Length: 221
Image (cartoon, rainbow, N blue to C red; front, side):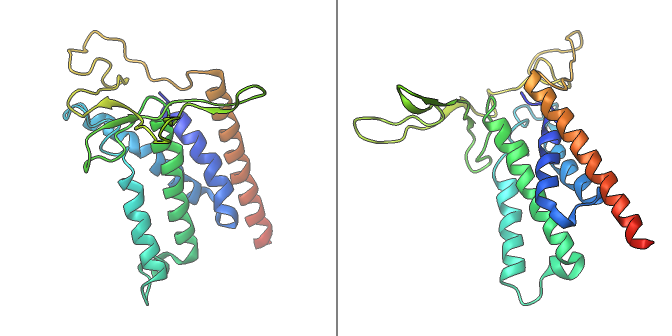
């Protein structure tokens, strides 16, 4: 599964791109920190089996705040967010929600599964698949299956519920069993592609922070 470092790396790249002229060290830290914090349900899972990839890995944890933000800014006469944090805070909040969705919730869902609709529906969905462009078969994807006869779309692969679906982690390597003697590993990158992503992101974010501070110093002179 993607490590915290991979989630942070993708969040860093998305945040750097989407923050635009609102980018600074505080803003990018807020984006990557919030994205990384979704894995805190790993610790909750030590006491509530099945909580990992359910408690903080569902769509509602992003969609509900996003709906409130949209209502607050576009529908209210006096925006709570804009009054307290101006356009800067508004930009940081919505970029944070975007990165939480794409850099963590959906990344895990497309990489061995997540309980996307919990608690309204207790079911882990595995959206793993591939997308291929072939000179003989055309565009081939395995994320969603179609019935060629009826044109119906089949449900994604389901893995179970919070009662019987567990993910091994460094904190809990053998869910449901004694783990005192089990190896506890905390991966940084499980593939070369993930390592490239981590390094590229950290370098990019560090460069932008240095550049932002240099520009700030120039403006004060």
